[in-house]
Image (cartoon, rainbow, N blue to C red; front, side):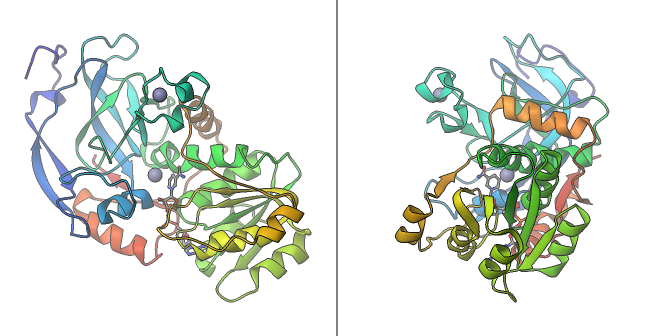
Length: 353
Ligand code: NAD
Ligand code: ZN
Ligand code: ZN
């Protein structure tokens, strides 16, 4: 241990941690012992209680995207735990505070994007569980300035999915530019989508849910969706147009490119379609329809620290209750297999306690 570990605690007196490590793309994760990291300037060491498993972690482990992480690395960006040691220069967190990591692990704070409230677009950002080791381990580092502050009394299993799924869909819904009373279609009712239904309802929107699995649609109905359509067995565009006259906003969280092309047909004139899901691939975009209907199509990536604070505040006020199932870190490969098969209802959260 170096002098930066200036606050010894029982939990930080160990020199090792265990973590699920990606050693090669597409290979099973290895649960192994790693040296406990030392918090650098502005960083804190966190003992994890829980971590949600996001589909992004699966994309990361498969090397699905053009910009790839470098194995070996530890995925996970919905981690929730307790601060056990402070690096130098940390003056707004103390040992014992509850914090979380996030995809936006840090941003430069100086570039045009950071200066204008778009730190999520910072080109110097670091990403939890991708370019910095994440929360699939018993300990993790976070940057104090960017760590999510977990509200008092939060249930560690329930709050974990807010740290990525929650903030992402909350921000995504905001940028649909919809207003209370208007229709929003949520395509993909998985970890992100089932939480999106809840934020949409809390924001006063009327919800259409689309998925390819009736179990997910049943969950959406229980959470307050007024219209549900199975994209595998029904003509989604016709059904949604018939039920709503076209929705004002669409949020695509699905993990298949087919849902992206389809989303364009769901919108009414002047509508906004927000892409959040990140399956590898492309989709056809009909130029005539987009132009004549005056549609806006935009991407949205996680949320800023302010979006995170707001998303957590919705949770703290009892408006959002992610459906969670707990698992052990050792089960991570099985969790990924179930995620790939679309067999998870809500979110699986690793419980380290
Ligand atoms: P998930 O596996 O929990 O859910 C995916 C859902 O998509 C499942 O319910 C599945 O049945 C559904 N689906 C599959 N094909 C479909 C189709 N053709 N039409 C409609 N639904 C379909 O995944 P998740 O954790 O919710 O993540 C979803 C996606 O969002 C992933 O690609 C992930 O990387 C991405 N993501 C993006 C951001 C961002 O900031 N933009 C943040 C987090 C996750
Ligand atoms: Zn995520
Ligand atoms: Zn920046």
